[in-house]
Structure formats: C-alpha cells, structure tokens
Length: 137
Image 1 (cartoon, one colour):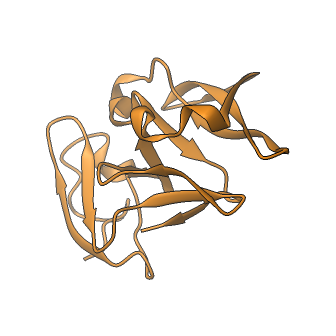
Image 2: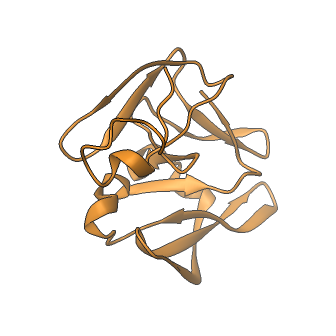
C-alpha cells in the first residue's frame, strides 16, 4: 500500500501532503484519523545519529518523506536550542535544534513547528531530522 499526493484519498487538506512510502520502510498499515496520519511499521521507527539511537517511537508521522517523532521520544541530552528559524508556506515557522553528543555536533539537524498552521497540525509537538540522521523503520 502506498499513499502519496496523487492518491484518490484527498478528503482532507493534510491527506494529500502526507507522504510517499517506498521500500525498505515496508508500510504495513496506514490510516487517517481526524487530525493526523499514522502508520504502523514492522519495526518501531528509530532515529540514529553518531551511532546512537536518539529517538524511538511507534507513534511517528511521516510528512513529505520526513519522520516526525513525538518530542517526548527524543533524548533531551542530545538537543541544544538553535537560533535558526525557517518558514514553510503550509506548515508555518520552524525552529531548530543542534544535535550534540560525545564531542560531535550537527548544527540545525532537527526541526519542529511550535505553532503549525491548521493543515499541518499533525506535526505539533514532534521533531524531524536532517537526512544525515538515519531513520530505521
């Protein structure tokens, strides 16, 4: 089962923007609730950086190919606040974290939307990572 913006399931603004799934993610089941898109995978998704698991959760949301982990599932000790902000036209203003662990840093490697726009409310209280953070699902 693959769902993407070309899907006929466009009953909500968020649905058409959510994700495209390709192997090796092996999507087992996907469904839309009233306020988010959720997916269940064979394995619990985890974010790995610098050979460390920095986030792990079975409650991830995939938007535009990025896994958004619940903020509570990300290890606090690896996140440092950043002054960087960007704006996405449909998600809103993003804030960033620098990753830091064992003497290694990755500036602005994680982002979140403190007050996402209505179409992106599924990413509220969630953190996504740059591509140099490996996500296994």
